[in-house]
Length: 190
Image 1: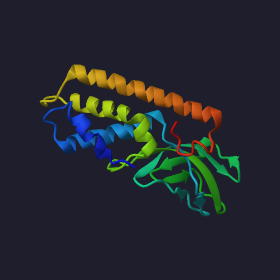
Image 2: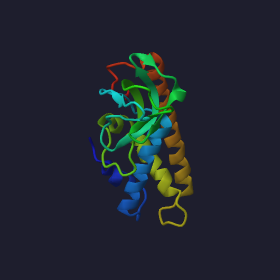
Image 3: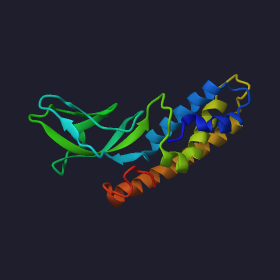
Image 4: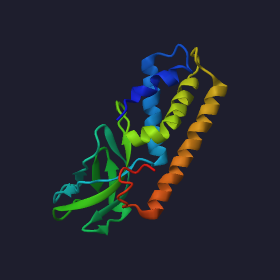
């Protein structure tokens, strides 16, 4: 898994004088926003989520430095639960009502990186790093009063970022409508 900081030199080249930590923070925010808005980082969890009688929360086994952005589906003994019966909360899946008995569930989720994540998924980096690059530059060039402020450049990078989010969203939708439980696309990237 590549370090998030791998994008720092490329981004920093377009925002002369911007401190490295500021660039890194913009990359992290763009990475998280890209995953949140596009829904592209999908994963069918290999380990079941265990729910204990009377306890609404079940902890999902996720990759390090990630949390659940959305739940695509949750199944109990193969039967889907209704979307209004559960919600994500960090690394947990929270049931609306505490269960009356212990059970395990299978889940497909949309992931997001944690705010201070140091690494990116290999497939995400390979396919979507340019989108994250544009998102970081949009954020940095939009900052008023800085020597690297560039309103025209910010508009360009924002448009590119939004376009890539749209493309990723379309791919995520294709994955969902084709077959959400496909083994070949286990990590959710296409």
